[in-house]
Length: 208
Length: 208
Length: 208
Image (cartoon, rainbow over all chains, first blue to last red; front, top):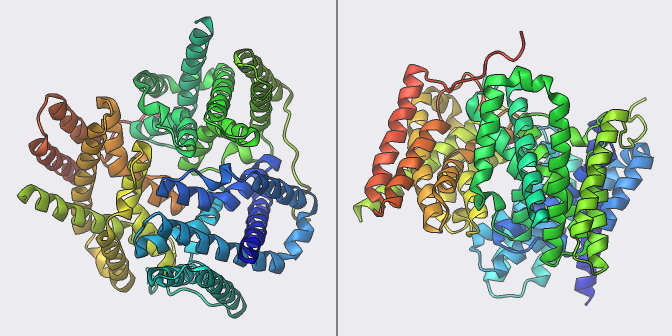
């Protein structure tokens, strides 16, 4: 009960934070209110939709009407107060980390439940958490930030958290504690990366 | 009978107009005949394919061979006469509005028929009508025009038409008249937007 | 038996070559190791995944764990030796042609087996072979190279090979010989295009 309430709360925070980041990107790219809503929506539900398509499940976003209210709300907030939201960038990043954590761990669990192997479950988990932001950047005409050199860790904490969930589930446990532990780990690693500027390794300079 | 014939005729006009706009975009982007055909196809059938994937249905474009003849024909017309087609821009925009109308209203109806809720049916309807053009712009390396500031209304008339279809269907009517009425409304609003330069609201300047 | 071994070997070569081209593109676009792996993966399995989604099948990449080992290996090779791999560009292109051939012919066969019509099977075949590279270019922020003027034949040999497979299968034969013959044809035409600089026709200059 408390776990479900916590998961719903984290999902709501994640949807809202992801939607904020999509709407802010739309403002930065000189889009109108339609573009803001579309980018907010694709960031918030795109990862889960891709996960569900790959697993052959009906998209969760089409069964969760209240998500769309959060997305519309985030769009409205950014429309009227984007300068203020931009100034709250740190708070948005913390909420985004919470969203990443909950989307990754639930996506991994869903994939493992429908019978995917361990490696595939981890991949699907990372897709559920990270693909929404990738689609946002593609629609905004940018190379996805999580793929670029010079950005802080995002996918690697996600993969690590997903791997822990799968390892615990594979050992025969139900995995609620693992989901909570993995979520906390993802959030902590993500925030540490932001704070300390940790980056993924890059190949040596390609020219020169 | 007459309704079905009208729907088939409007679908054909829509497929052809969407394919023309895709092929023209390819010419503008210095693509070869392969790029022209691919952009024509993705514009014409991409929205419906995404709708079908999200609803778990087999893609309509893979059961409608005559669509591909229209797409090939539109590609050929643009290949040989793109300067002339470019000069007929207004006629293409009118046909595009017809395509938008028929794709939106049929997509909404399909979504509602397979059991989606009202808000979800409206969203799927707008995706069916608008996503093809978004995919065309992404493949052409552009920020999708329907999302950008400074472009005339496109998604909002689509959403309004879809909402009317869902409202009438939810009230228990079969909805053929609603589909026709909503299609006319979409076309009229779209053409008025083009004529009068109506735009969706944008947030106040993000810098300054 | 020998045919299956040959198909597995060609698939492995194709996955590895496609993954190399994705990872090399990531290096050229200043991505980190995460971007390299994501681009390697999307190039290697994106076409097949899109084919499976359109056909309503579970994605092959989620049932083939050893593909992911090849993708990780290709990423590692490019990470440490990308200058050397870049110098082996010709060898990569030959392997890429082998991958194109095997992905096209298997995709067409799968589509035909699940009941698609001839034209639809050819389209799905070309999507299975070519869409991975298109997705790679989109994620890299480039207009897909196979669509652009001035690039050598890629999609047309693919379509021709797929058409041969469908024609032989439609005539009632099992099609193993056709798959082999079509694969060789695709490879030969692709390499001839590279060697002789063959290009697809383009429309006359759009400006001027």
